[in-house]
Image (cartoon, rainbow, N blue to C red; front, side, top):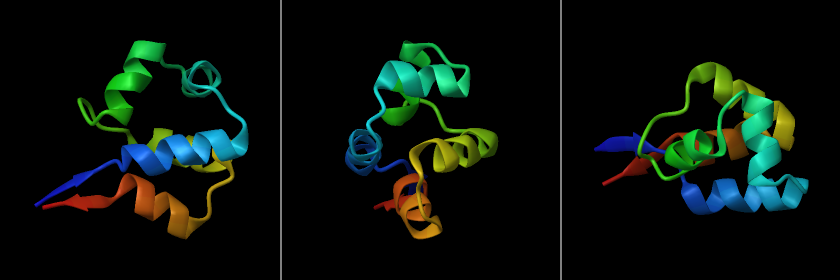
Length: 73
């Protein structure tokens, strides 16, 4: 079992918050390609990036955990 980012739920959260991928990447200090790789589980989000996204997107702790700590079977 592997812990992954729930790509669909993250993109929904970004839309709900009215944030583009460009704005989100800039807020994290990432390139758009760097953000894309993290969203697609090609690389992992760092704890500091998860914390920043939680604030940036206005996520609850439950939403954060569902998005960033999704169990892949």
